[in-house]
Image (cartoon, rainbow, N blue to C red):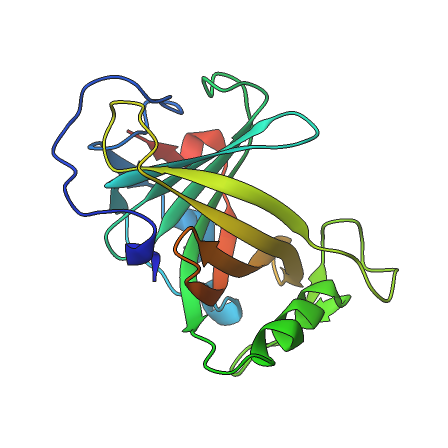
Amino acid sequence: MFDRLFGRDRSSVEPGLAAARNVTIGRTVVLDPLAWRRFGGALNFPFDGDTLQIVAQGLVELDGGGFIHRFYTDDDIMLQAVSDDREAKALTDVTLFAPWRSIYPSTPWERPAWRQRLTAPGFTDDGLPEYRRLWFGDEAERQEPVTFWEDLHDDRDGIVDRRIYQTCMLFGRDVEGEGRELLLAIDMETEAREVSFEIMIGMALELGEFRA
């Protein structure tokens, strides 16, 4: 899925990118799987490992202030950290996302239909229950999704290797045991005009539930 976003030569570990609690390209992240295992079979979260090998990194600068730092593995697991600063010193939110499904549109009308799904108060897909819109609340019948450019890095030299434009919306559902499972629905378009639709399932992490 994310092969289109970055290359595969990731040998450099020279400084140049932010490290979020020591997480950056070339590092191994150790997870506490009890963060999701404690909910048993109530989750659809399609990941049950305890380590991540970070091979690529993304940065999003939000229009309203703040930054999203994304760390990717070879099998498209994404550790996402939101911070108030570019250097990722002050993290406000950390989430682990795993891919559920990728869709590659082959007809021109598929994209408008997908975009409509992103504006709805609820989202579901084959094999999934309904997730309710979290960004902006789910009261409005339609809500425009969030859009941004993500700068992708193959190594730590700080030079942007490629960019991708994303239109996305975050949904969630409560699970037994006072948990919440997240669903991130995305419309992705590369600078080469390649388009895909992505569904990722995620779980929020506490700062003590991961280390690098």
